[in-house]
Length: 387
Image (cartoon, rainbow, N blue to C red):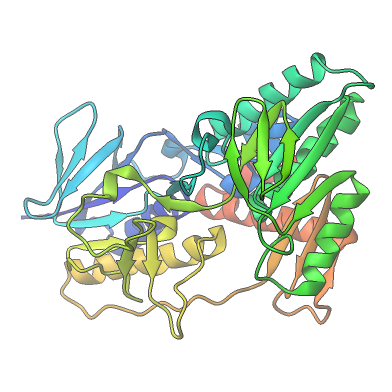
């Protein structure tokens, strides 16, 4: 009987794994791909839609352009996984059996129990999120004036928060819109835990775009019009965006696999196997064991490179072969601030931190390369001008 391999998720982990699995299995197993969207979103470019919603056509890739005809695709929402009976439970149809399962469902936004945050804040984890932020910012700007500008508050100064601020600033300038932008970070500096030179370069470019940066005090509470920061500061807002952390999806919380108690992400070894040898996990939904103390980072780059090895390992498991161990190698960072960009610690580049046209072209090239990998050069070339 032919083994059934099921892949969950259409993000970098899921889409990349499908390409790898199809190449490695070459018909030796039946592949089923399940996702709640029928497209792959180039998530690290989704912030572009905050400024210009038309970009969505360049960064959403239909699954039929990625998968082979022999791979079955099911659009549905995963509600649970029964590891005893080897069944993926779905919202709108009967469960799907598997012999080997790859969980690449990504993550959802963590609100850390902050009162009112979930109810009042926009998040930036999907295309709909980015389009919703665009609409909210546009509406707030229409109702504002130069003497009473719209107040946009972005909580969390990681990649998503920084890039969201850059796009809102570009929208403001493109439309001459009366908007004040505030970036709030609870730790002492933006892009926490990273190189101070990179932090300084990002801060400089944000401040050049008139982004007001507040660091060192955490958001403690939110109501429908005010963000309460630390013990004393209050910041009124018209639009609130929260990008301050991630946690595992609800559908994996009760799965019989070892998970982190705080964020419900699945523990997996360097070969992507979980505590159940038939279940593999990669991407943001997983804490992938690495040499040293820290797991692999929850980045597009890590999911992208892990997916290739994960697909090969599942093919090896199907054939009873030993599995390979994957080690993440950081190739550097490229971050956009509107039409500008900053790059840092890029493999093969002698300068630690740089901006200008080289950084901007690098950022575009990363997105174009990924699109080329999953669907081909034609779509990558089409997307290039908007990256």
